[in-house]
Image (cartoon, rainbow, N blue to C red; front, side, top):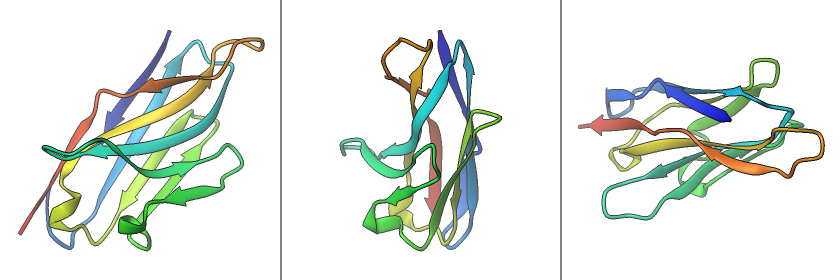
Length: 121
């Protein structure tokens, strides 16, 4: 069993910063990609940023230049540094990890419980 535990959400004023963390634990052989998604009220969940095991990254256009994703492979943890936050960044943020629990097992997606990020004016 694999668990993803997120932390770091909260209320912040526009222009401020927050740092999200997500730690994976349990039976883990390897973690491939790690990512952050978000879901705002009445909207579908969207990919915000992703990071491969080799450190290569992806960002949705709306957050480029403001958000930075990183990972610590030794700690099975992914981070999302969010700067210059805007009202439209308000959402529940979910971490996602593609995990292999054994050497011969397939990669499976696991999700965190979500953490609320609210940006106020």
